[in-house]
Image (cartoon, rainbow, N blue to C red; front, side):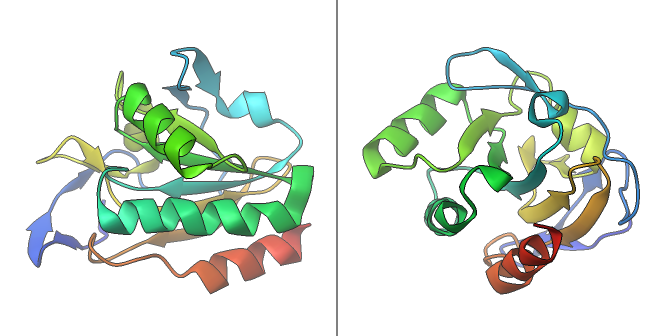
Amino acid sequence: MNTKVTFGGNPVTLIGNEISIGDKAPGFNVINDDLKPVTLGDFKGKVKLLSLFPSIDTGVCSMQTRKFNTEAAQFGDKVAFLAISADLPFALKRFCGAEGIDNLVPLSDHKEMDFGQKYGFHISELRLLARGVVIIDQNDTIQYIEVVPEIGNEPNYDAAINKLKELV
């Protein structure tokens, strides 16, 4: 993937397929916090915001999850908000339970790194996902992609939410 990403100012390597706006969204396999398989097809017919981050147990990742959880409330069931990381499902469940995160679906790519590979967010050196946001419309076409250049920075929430408002 040609996207340049740093972690603490040091370059990291993103591996997997490079996605583009207008592409058909690749199907993916992840697991939920009950260790059950979840696929893109489980959200068929909905607009989907995928909030991607390295680890829920870090400050920026937890802020990102709280922010999108708050934003999700205004969309109701029109948009599926998916929080995807390579964290263990148990960590995601613990965090979301403790923080009252109930407007988004926490999903783990830990088992296979299938999402990371198919969307080009897999950080080779760390076996984590890069930080970013992907928005997929109800026809499963990619409408928005942000790969945050420095993993320690937050995504552009306003741009993502504005794109969602255009789509619903």
